[in-house]
Image 1 (cartoon, one colour):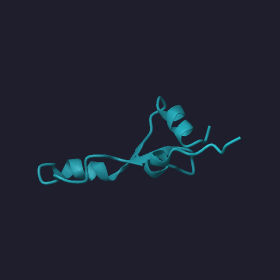
Image 2 (spheres, one colour):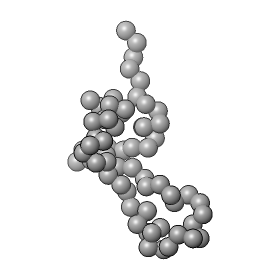
Image 3 (tube, helix red, strand yellow):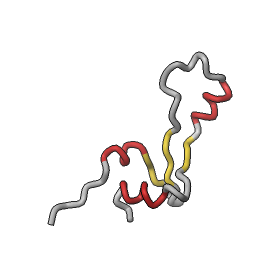
Image 4 (cartoon, one colour):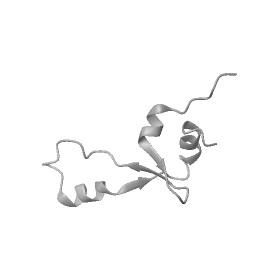
Length: 65
């Protein structure tokens, strides 16, 4: 029986916190930052959390379920 591999792209993008929440870094903060407002860029610094609807799918990618 072969080993079951974790999805490599998912393990780079998502992190499970101590309380069990799954966090990710928000998108649209890499380039073309001059036209984006300071308020918008500041909001993009915060970590995002996975919604309950996507949770089972992400856990399956991470092989945690």
